[in-house]
Image 1 (cartoon, one colour):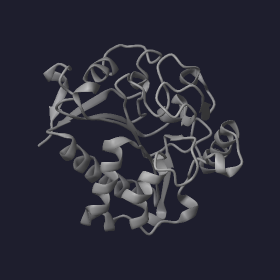
Image 2 (cartoon, one colour; image 1 turned 90 degrees about the vertical axis):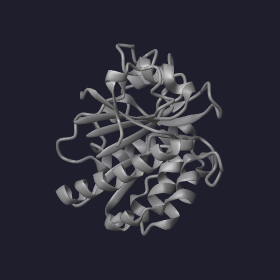
Image 3 (cartoon, helix red, strand yellow; image 1 turned 180 degrees about the vertical axis):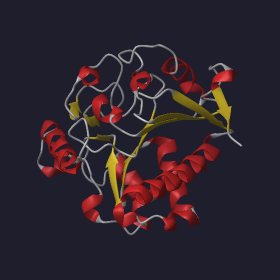
Image 4 (cartoon, helix red, strand yellow; image 1 turned 45 degrees about the horizontal axis):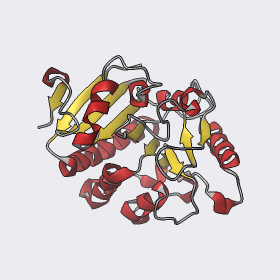
Amino acid sequence: MSVPTVIIHRDADVLAKAVAARVVVRTLDAQSAGGSAHLVLTGGTVGIATLAAIAASPARDAVDWRAVDLWWGDERFLPSGDAERNETGARKALLDHLDLDPERVHVMRGPDSGMTAEEAADAYAEELRRAARPGDHVPAPAFDVTMLGMGPDGHVASLFPGMPALHDTRPVVAVHGSPKPPPTRISLTMPVIRNSAEVWVIAAGEEKAEAVREALSESEPARVPAAGARGGQRTLFLLDRAAASKIPSSEGIPAP
């Protein structure tokens, strides 16, 4: 696994715009190399702001969006269209503004599908398996970029400290009793996250600062899940100054 690189931006607004620019460039690089790209989206304030910044960027049109597979790291197990779903926010901020191939937008199903959370997790795992490419070490594609928000407790996706999902080796799991509402969710697991070429942990706000510091130290992933979120080729911690305020200054690279 790669050693994290820390890049610090002035504030959350600049952070979102900078991550958006990185997404466009990384997607273009992936398409140049292989003709397509696999991206994992995240929700949350900065995650959705990043998607809105992509939508507002003239550079977005350089990407062949019909050759992009879009995935989610986790989803709240709520009906389609619910305002709390990551998918709903992503569609409003970006997806509805792009010429996408609907077959390549991989949505985690909600209860309106008639599935239980476990069945929805299994269905997503099957989509991942079908999209796996030769050489992948788990039954899922080696995502070009997996974007992850991080909570003040250090959770990523819906992998919370001390919960069984952190140790699950299946590609996708149903999470019950989440400490953050709603209580039922669907999440990728660590083996799939670590199968990504690049993992970007994106965090803003002083309330994240302690978790950022611990995620970059030798903390156990069982206690600080973000400490286990690493990409095979590259890991970036993309932060604003507030979220980076408790890490040694020598560890961070100020953005231009």
